Image 1 (cartoon, rainbow, N blue to C red):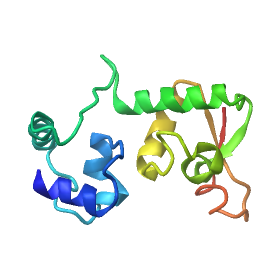
Image 2 (image 1 turned 90 degrees about the vertical axis):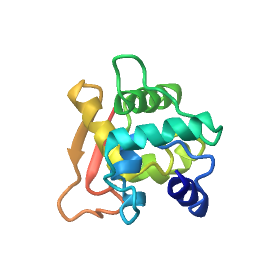
Image 3 (image 1 turned 90 degrees about the horizontal axis):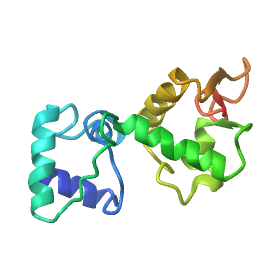
Amino acid sequence: GKLLLAFVHDNGLDDAVMTVYEIREGDATARTEFHLIDKTVLLKTLKVLEEQGKVVVLEAEEGGDSDAAGGKLLLAFVHDNGLDDAVMTVYEIREGDATARTEFHLIDKTVLLKTLKVLEEQGKVVVLEAEEGGDSDAAGGKLLLAF
């Protein structure tokens, strides 16, 4: 628990919302002692930290998972901002001005891509490849999203 709290504090993530997947497999934790830690061990650690009042654990909706919950947040943002027929890049979602005050701004790219895959499987987003020779950074890793 102390290692996790130290990582969060040292990386300025004190007020961040992170998923279990992000902690275990995200880019930010790739070189830490808890990267790829057993999920059961991580959940027990988080429960102890929550009992000590050091973290707040938010549960995914019953029968759902964090990717589905993240997808609902993203779709709500798209709808609330009139972007239902918009084409956006992964970069725009993660780092764009429009998302600066959202829960998914600066989200781990792996987590975002997994969430988008769930939305694509549900038919709620279309993931398109950017044109050949295009600016892959500006296109968010060559992925364009049509909502």
